[in-house]
Amino acid sequence: MRLEATETDWGDGSPERTTMAAGPSRAHRSDAGFTLVELATVAVLIVLILAAVFPKVHSAYSAETLREAQYLTEAYLTTARAASVQKGRTTVFHSAGQRVWVTTDSSGVQVSYRAAVRLDSAYNVTMTASRDSIVFNGRGIAVGLSGSQTITLSKTGITKSICVSALGAILQGGCVS
Image 1 (cartoon, one colour):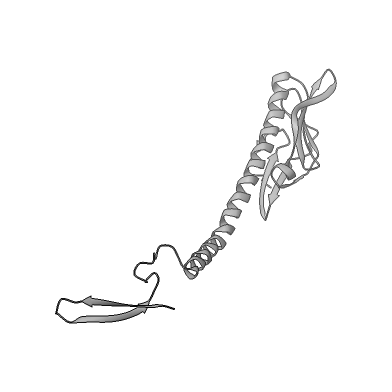
Image 2 (image 1 turned 30 degrees about the horizontal axis):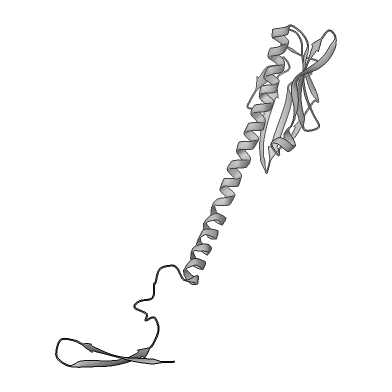
């Protein structure tokens, strides 16, 4: 290592002699950027914040997808009832195999009126229903029901219920006992 000698005049007439290593001095080296410790600290703080926020965000997402599945199921029920009144024909709301769909009568044959939607794959919810289908006559009245029917949708501990009364009215809050 080569040493360089420099003289500094401090203005009082007495020069000062210092010796330092050749190469870029600390005063000329750029201090821009972050140290590894600073970067690691920021990374740890970000991980801690995400760990604290994730359960709340995930819970809100689960509740929202469950609500969307509920709205879709209610829309299909409403469509079945409305189509039966509008067309004056038998219309059936189906809820089997984690799917919902609507069929309507066309010259004695049930044809698809609304395509089947798989609630388990589209919304990641589980559906249970007290019946596999609800039949609405040409006046929009449910036929063949001995009492109200419940369709329950659930996801990660959250449950939503849809009730169809014995006459075919769709009650969003679930069946009242």
